[in-house]
Amino acid sequence: MPRIRLLPDQLVSQIAAGEVVERPASVVKELVENALDAGAGHIAIELERGGKGRVRVSDDGCGMDEDDALLAFDQHATSKIDSIEDLSRVATLGFRGEALSSIAAVSRVELVTASQPGDGHRVYIEGGRIRAAEPASRPVGTTVEVASLFFNVPARRKFLKASQTEMRRALEVVQGYALARPDVHFTVTHDGRQVLDAPPAGEDAEGARRRVGQLFGGKLANALVPFSESRGDESVWGLFGDPTTTRGRRYFVFVNRRLLRDRAILASFYRAVREEWRADEFPALFLFLDLPAAEVDVNVHPQKSEVRFRDGRLLQRLFLILRSGARAALGDVEVAPRAAEGTPAGALAWQGLGGRESPWPPAGASPATDWSTVSGVAEGTSRRLAEAVSTPLERAPVPLSGRSGRERPFRLLGQYKGTLILLEGPDGLYLVDQHVAHERILYERLQRSLQKEAVSAQTLLEPLLLELAPAEALRLGELGAALEQCGFSLSQLSGDTIAVSAVPADLGPEESERLLLNLAQESDGTQPEDAEALKASLLDSLAASMACRAAVKMHEPMPPEAIEALIGELFAAEQPYACPHGRPIVLKMSDRDLEERFGRR
Image 1 (spheres, one colour):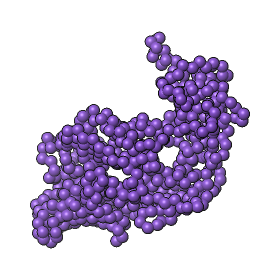
Image 2 (tube, helix red, strand yellow):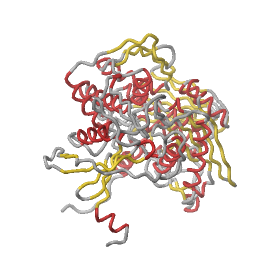
Image 3 (cartoon, rainbow, N blue to C red):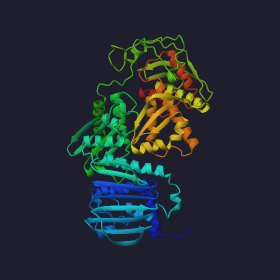
Image 4 (tube, one colour):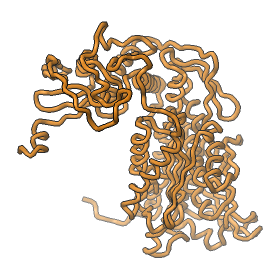
């Protein structure tokens, strides 16, 4: 076994850089954060070849003197914390002193900075080694130019994507900080062409709304409802979308103006919408939490994309605030599904894809029970937890063999609130979500159909106009060829507006808009690069969207014959236990669980 030895400083720097610098967008993130911490009012980002050739970030912040300009490139050199106590109350975006040293270790960096007008300094570093340090003239502020990223780490460089993809990732970073700081002017230029110009919009809620309009268009901005609540030195405020904004996944959370992807906060948002709107489609959200620095631990993630709250009760207060925001955004709009006028109580008008009739319920079937009364949603009935109803349980067992080939007799017990199907199984009670069950069945049908046949398209009488953020428009541009094979026809208009003149024949304009917006916002690299694989992925997304749209909704009563037909086909499916989006279809309460709950074990 080799002897233990210390690694050379240059190798240590390159290893450390791997945690901080993944791609040009990482460089943009660190440099923009430094500019904001320096008090910049205008930040200009220039990119060449998506940042693979060059990233240049200029600001009008406070700048640095000669000593700081040189010291800034040393490992763990920072002006933002000085002690362990400071680490517990970080109020700046950066604080570890890793960014500039990590960037300089894997690129060629030129820094020009001045803390006094005209009295500036230039530092040039190549692969972590200082090559030049000399006086320079510039206005107060700092310019950092990063060229030839990963020139000395070819294994890392070959994993970079195409220039358009890298440029889109960098744009997404800038958009996040532009939303976080609507009072700052941001501009982005790519290969000499300006792709983003967001002038100062103000620091309050109206400023945030104007910034949303600059990035995503006036249609989204006008559909946002402001909300706010303050408690001592804590402030929670933001913009909540109305039901028209559910067609895209635009959820942005900022804690002390730091953009996060916090699962706990988003879970509070989802819960608030479900409870207030009684729906599983979520509107746009731009949420700002302004808290004392000591109440937030930002040193829990290498990329600083997660935080930990020291007050565990904050999330519960946040849920209540979001719930009131959801209520305000809903206004007088009715989002809960209602039975069609004139439909008999308990009857279910099932419609399949494109208006074609689904095989459920069988022709001539009539409900044996008034299911709307059982669920407590019939016109004129009170909304009690349960109604006293005596229903004879004389349904014959439903034989379900599934893919295992082993027959399992289930007996239908009924339907709970027009949402859950209750089955008596040989080993317990089974609860089936009727919407996601039907969605799974339709999804597998559509998958088989789309794989066999070419997707037919329908031309829209009036083109669908999508107002997109610059990064979203780039994303759809990357997917253009594959989208055309799926039945879409897209063309670029002025700015970042895209016109959709044709959509798949079985998909309406509203669902097409929802699908395209979701695709435009997928920025985590989940879509494959290969054209055929990309087409297969899009067809899968298309099938999932079409199935969700056509599936029976919540709170729709179903006759027993329809339930039995649905359950029979569900358990014959390839995957009967999860919908295309990953939600569970079947929950089981075993005999043992029930006996323990009633104290019989």
